[in-house]
Image (tube, rainbow, N blue to C red; front, side):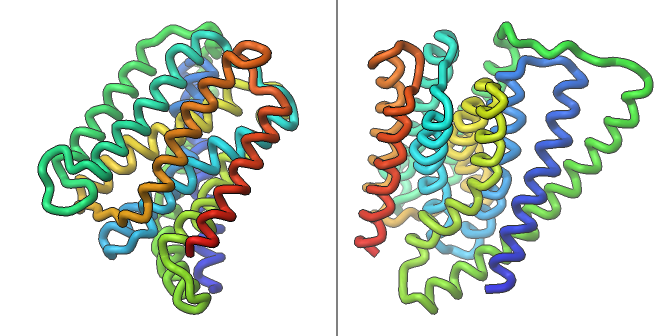
Length: 314
């Protein structure tokens, strides 16, 4: 139990180091705040999930897949619900037309390789070829994000005095990555022991305890950003994290070692798909392009309902 808690602490601290370093470099170069939120912060906050999935795949446990699905559901229902309840979330039309459909597409693409064996694999899960296809989609998304034009561009800073910040940022990123992957191994080991002690499945631990724990960076950053009325970071962080989870993490982990998936996860995947479509639909219900407080409360209640269902399922 001690290693489980310590592992989570190192995971979160490591992710924070990476985010601080990467965001500093992004601001130095001068890119849009939406790009910082979706790509830099979104990917940075998902590093714990990446480390856990690689470790889980090597050890042959269902914790990794459960963590991704559970974390995505919490991001879309729990975090989006909370920040919308704190303050209505008004999105730009171009974000809705470009980024929300990409999020839905990422859910569909990952579901196809998780459950349909599109390349003819002899087990339900992700083969190396399917993982490569996901990773190619991830690279294509990164390319799209890099070349697109946004209005909220941060002015670059090129003063010589700032050069030292590059070295500090690079050190933060390296230290963070080391901490993230070290902590993940302890989290996986602790989760297995907790599951055995509590008499519950490892998949349930992944969908709940670990999924919520690895989403601590996302909720902390999104809440802080929405309080400061920075919707770009608050929502971009959620979308970027989800897309990276489904395309990048499943792609990278599956290339390293094929990932087997339990059929029990079909329900969780469908819940995630419906959630992604529902949030897109909310953009055209009531005040256009806005998630209202009422809608935020509804999303959070849907998350509580999900937790109740999977807890009863065991």
